[in-house]
Image (cartoon, rainbow, N blue to C red; front, side, top):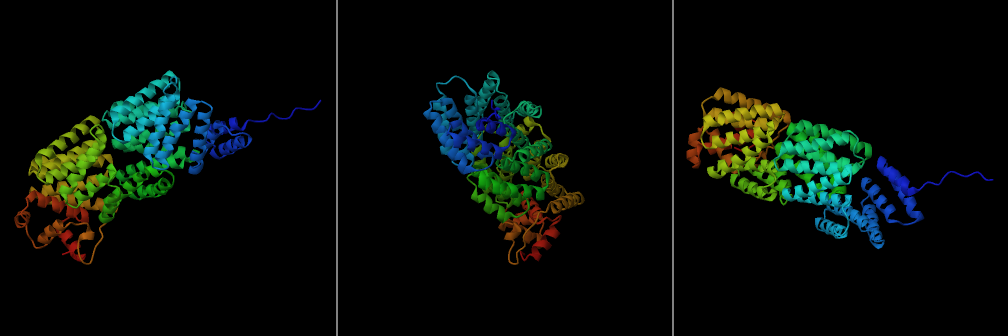
Amino acid sequence: MTEAGPAQRDPLLDGGEALRRGAWGEAREHFEAALEERETPQALEGLGMAAQWLVDRETVFVARERAYRLYRQRQLPRDAARVAIQLAWDYRTFRGEPAIATGWLQRAHDLLSDEESSSEHGWLALREASVLLASGRLAAAHELASHAVELGRLLSDVDLEMTALALDGLLLVNEGKVAEGMRRLDGSAAAIVGGDLQDLSAISHSCCYLIFACERVRDFDRAGQWCERLAEFCERYGSKPLFSVCRTHYAGVLMFRGRWPQAEEELRLAAPELETNVAGMAGEAFVALAELRRRQGRTDEAARMFAEVEHLPDGRLGCARVALDQGEYRTAADHAEQYLRQVGSEAKTRRVAGLEVQVRALAALRDSDRAQHALEELTLIATDVDTEPLRASALAAEGASAAAAGDLPGARPALEDAVTLYARSGMPYECALTRIELAQVLAASGRNDDANKECARATEALEQLGVVSKPSPSNGKSLGLTGRELEVLALVADGLTDPQIAQRLVISEHTVHRHVSNILVKLSCSSRAAAVRRAAAAGAL
């Protein structure tokens, strides 16, 4: 009697177990072994999943498209639909081809149309909801996400339910329903921490949705904590493409916090990965880097970068911010208006950044009615969201608008309160710029000592952040100054007062105040005399 040898293992089952552990290389080996024995759609689908995490794009598309065809040949519509949903994600993120991605989603719809309710219906709804979110169609996205939550509960699919709950929370936050949205995100996060979720993709996407939501309402402490948790997850399971996307948002958090070297490092790490691995999302890192350059005072470089991606909403926003920095208020107002149209009326919290620019640009243009309308919308959103950074944003815009209208008594307390909230929120750049606006109001009110103190504190903060200007031997363009700002500074150098400058240039005193404020920010100077000295040294006067 011969002794029985060890039972032969099934490479397909071993591959599935390795996927659950996040052992991507091992999983790939098992699925390849299974395919050597016999080509099956299950082995191809598993290989495609392992290749996705290993960032082997060629294998992802070959394996999944072949798996789709085999599932179709074997008349397994639900399985074919599941792979079609995966391919829709691949084409949107790996190749940046949304039209083809939409085609795969339609194929999944067709395949599932006569099938009983299943998890595939829920994941299809989530994928479509994420596309709608990107286009600003939040109500329709919310309906799909809610449907996916219900399906997950009905089918006892915790991964589907919690991922849908997280996406629905993000949608609610974008709509301005922050308390309700955060409750849903907290529920999903608790399930992750508690070990209720098994699917690693579901876990990682749920974490990303929470980070996006925190960034949207500028809840930076919370966002930072979850970014660290996600970084640990990505390092443990080798998820480079996923963290490339999330680390761009983490860089945004660091940027607001004034941790610019760390933000640049995150973007340096993220951008090559995004360009190589997730082409459809590469624009996010590029826009974030351009915004960092703008804050650093590298205005010309920022302007060139934003111009390359002005077709994207955030690229358009960057163009608006640069124009505002340069005192080109009509251009800034036009860009801000286009940005607000692009993001739509439903994305309340996303509108904040555009409204911040719009209020200031319209106020400087003396378009008081439209400026007031934009301010009212910004204030309403800030009140509904009720986070200190957004309340500071609304107060700063209120103060700037009042100052432009000549209401100095109304401008001062709004700007003072905004400075306090920005400081308490740990946003040094915004705090410094608001201090300079406050200094202008104090100077115009005859309180020169207080104005100089605020300007000095702002200058110190900007220097600590690393705000730079680039001197030129021939002109002030590379100082970041517009032609009008150079005219104003030249008249300041000649000893003219603000009323005299206003009369000479046929503009209002408030516009002169705004130009001087911009000059001080761009040159990182605490006084007009210092600005004149710096411009003269650069050969601009």
